[in-house]
Each structure stands twice: as C-alpha cells, then as structure tokens.
Length: 303
Ligand code: CP
Image (cartoon, rainbow, N blue to C red; front, side, top):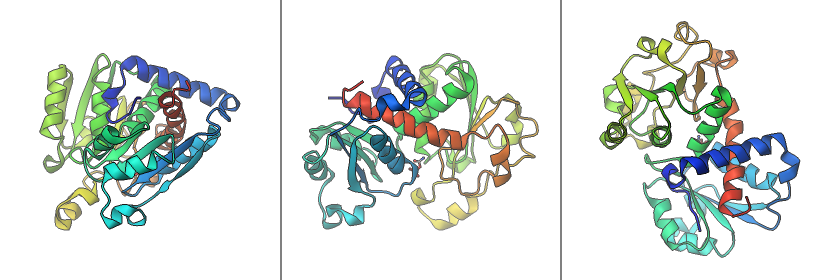
C-alpha cells in the first residue's frame, strides 16, 4: 500500500508518470468517468480549505467514485478528544482512500502508520503540501514544456508556507534549477530547508525586494503570509502587505514568466494582474483537479 505524505515519497519517474496520466485525463476525460465506480474517497479536513478539499471531491466524482468526510475538526469526534489514529482506523472501514489535512506537522504520517487504506497528506501545519506540489509541477510542465533549467522566485511567507517547502523538495530533483528566495528576514525559509538546498548543490540566493530580481525569473511563485501560524497578531499586521505584485512591478519581467500562487490570495497579487497573460494561478487551480484524479488512480492501483 502506498501513501503520499511527502513529495519525495514518489520518485521523479513516478511524478512524471502522474503528469502523463493527468494530461491524458485532460485530453480524454470520457475514458475516466467510470473508472472509480464503487470506490469511496474520505476527506478528513481538520483545517479550513477550499481548493484542496473540493478538488479532491471533484476529482473522485469525475472518476465515477463517491466521497464522504468532514470539513472541520469541530464536526468530527476530534472535538470529543478522539486521536488521529483512531479516526483514520475508523474511516478506513468506510472508505478506500483518505485525504487528510491537519494543523499539526506529522499528523498524516502518524495516520499512515495506523491505517488500512492509502493516506494522502492534504497539508500538515507549516510542514508540507505534496498534492499542491503535484499541482504546481503539472502547471509548470504545461506552461514551460519542461521541469528543468529554470529560475524560480519564491516570494512571501517562506517560513510558514508549506507549499514552498514541498515545491523546493520536488524541484531539487530536476537539473539546473536556481532558487531566488524573496522574503523579509522574519519570514525567510527555515534553516532545515536552506540546508536541504545546500546539500543538493542547487544555486540559490535570498533577497528582500522582488523588483531587484524580477527580470531573472522564469517562474514567480507568490504566497500569502500565513496568519494562522503567527504567534501574535502585531507581527502579522506588520508583515502581511510586504509584497503586493502589481503591473508596475512586472514591467521588467520576462514575457514568458509564469506567475503562480497556491491560493487563497489575500492582498499579495493585485487584481489587475489577473488579466495579464502571465498570470497562471487559476490555470493552476484547474491542474489541481486533474493531478488529484491521477493520484487517486495511482494510489488505488487502478492506473
Ligand atoms: N492551495 C490550497 O491548499 O488551498 P486551500 O487551502 O483552499 O485548500
């Protein structure tokens, strides 16, 4: 039985295979519409979500399967003190595969040790978000036609932004990737992640102003400041609007820059950017549905 807890649980070949399946689903959706008939996905979300939970739901429904679950811890027996392990052992009796989001880092890993069905980490605290990374990789490969030889700017809350951590882990396995880390000092990438980049021998640098590096970038990956992970509101208010991408700031950017954002957006991309052809964050949302279809098929052993 396979799980997806960290993006590195899948080899580069396996990720490329998932991308191929997702592209085939995009081209031939009818071939997949009944392929999960009789299968049930459980979505256990102990933290808020729009895209991840609903794209998993949409993915399973588009494959002909069914979905059950809860959208907040308060409406589950976690509110009565039930452990994550007991919850997943229970839900494994009702479903064939589980997608789980939890505010505590490592909760999906613990779940995977006690489960009878595959577990997908749908985001654990400030740690990892591997299915967002699969989404990002599908989007980048469709936009650029490759996953190697590029400069990626990661901008915003690099400390608590789990999507950034998973994306870096994934991109380190491709050739000639240069990372430009754009953040205020307080929100810089955690030490363990900087050490991971160093150990892999990739090129990287840290800057505080996005304008200083805009012209170098092939991908600009914007992130919001993660209010829910701050220890005090004062720091959040001081840092929340550090970066607001607008058309002026894009003046020196490459014509084929791809602007990504895992969303939700708060204030960090001005709405005027949405109509710029380089804005790809809603294409990215759609890719999330197709790559999760591919992942469900893979973990259920259907494809
Ligand atoms: N990208 C992402 O994880 O969005 P949600 O929090 O809405 O699921």
